[in-house]
Image (cartoon, rainbow over all chains, first blue to last red):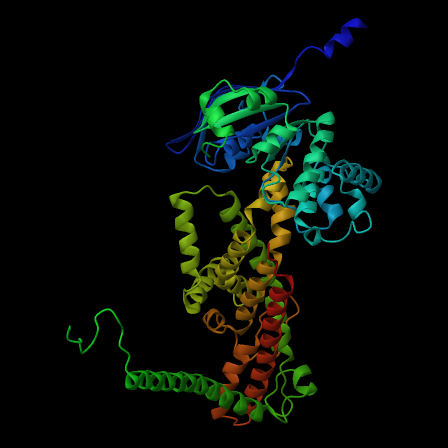
Length: 261
Length: 301
């Protein structure tokens, strides 16, 4: 029995990125990235515009491959398996690794249909189960109380912040292991942003979260680890406290203190 | 003291009142000229419609719609042509919708960006502007002769389908392209494959656009004459078609032959007018449906 308990203390890398290079045509966007992501932590990725942080997070679930000219090199191990290997199906990877996008992107369907989209495409047909999933996910995304009386209304009737939480609920509905968030609050007002940040604390208990953010305060408030990207390179990756209090690289310090970017 | 500079100051635009008046005059002239062109088009259309409608009065009634052809103008009707048109649509609608939409889905969603794909896309657009007689010849060669379908409804329907297929493909392509990328991303991000995404997200959003294009294409097929003339649709057909292998006639063909035969029986002109009214009303209804669908279901993101 002791051994089982010990399992908790063995550090498990959800993601282990090894020597990742990425090109858009001839332009190299990511250069030799090495980085490990731990389970049930929030990892924030910060950096100025065009530093490759969005490219990087989209590589983690291979969404970047929807752009035809992209070429990658190196390895990304997801729970020990290389996501670029031919045996890895992107559909499976993206089911395990959910994504929340920069702009809220609900489907032009009802709120209910949005949340159960994932379960439905993965074969759940039972109305009762779908309803349970919908309620659980919407509660998880702190949206249930606001929408429980109008689940059949079109999702585009919701406010921007609500739409984004609906997208988070939709992602949670397929019970992923990791949630990737690509600047999820950049299109939202401060109140909606605050609600999503509060939500992140809860998400951490069940999911591993990787979030790209433009907002350094946000990274400092919510994340356990922070990665600083600059011109396609990972400059520094450490505990958030350390990065913000005592960065080891001069460029990180310059960026964090607002000297550029 | 400096002498005051007279004449135009280089740094300032000196306006001239006469010139402004002249330009206002030109503008007014242009306005009237353009409105005159519009009036001309409307008047011509009005005269045409008036003539047709006036000619059809007294002839266009229930008996006309439900009677068979006859050599006596008072007894003649277009039941055969109406049923022929319906049969033709039974071929054209499924063939163009299935072929057109699947082609568009392949070209827009699956085909890799390549020289071949661009070549195909350009040529589909070109195909839409090929004269309909050419499609008639194609139908005559392939369907009537090679597949020996003769001048049956099937041969006519397939020929008409080829004629309007490019219109449906182009309309469907545009409808698919108008679906915002972030909806596809959302679906892929949930682990959906391409087909699931197309079926559950892309198609429901683009259906109104596809339908609008399809209805316009179908209304073109209903009004088209030339390809069927080339296929050799019989001049006079008394038998009402009962299956897709039967000979048939359609409203525009009926109009054509009645108009030709006015030399023999002047009353045929009234029958032609009455048929034109029926055809125009049908097309008008179809086009209205297309506009209603477009306005009602058009989504903005």
